[in-house]
Image (cartoon, rainbow, N blue to C red):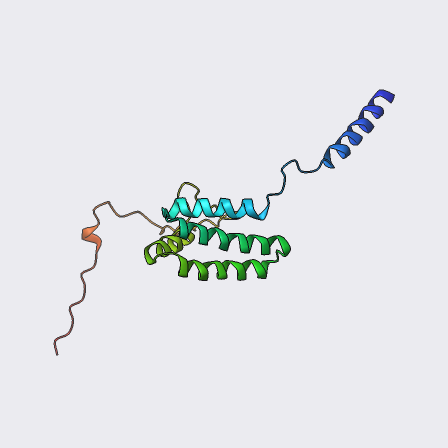
Length: 149
């Protein structure tokens, strides 16, 4: 009995100590975040122009620094809208169109999963009585002819 109690107490202490281990992944700097975002955007939109690439990096860096200072939901939405507005001036019309379509239609390899359980469509009630045969043409009523005027 004593061994059992000591084992349980040891397990509780071990679990408590393990739960307080800090996250092992270091937080990325704004420069790393901006570089990653820029590389991904340039790869997806096939941007090769160094001036365009540099302008996009500076824009991403500006908003990444703002995000590290304050990260509320409202400010995130405002930053996203400002990013889109700035990209409209930086990208060509074709690239901007690709960017907007990428935002609306995300990567097809990662289908969006709905949160929770989707309600199932109810099956139509089956009419009582015998089912008509597969070829039910003889059961259809003819359309009434329209009256002549």
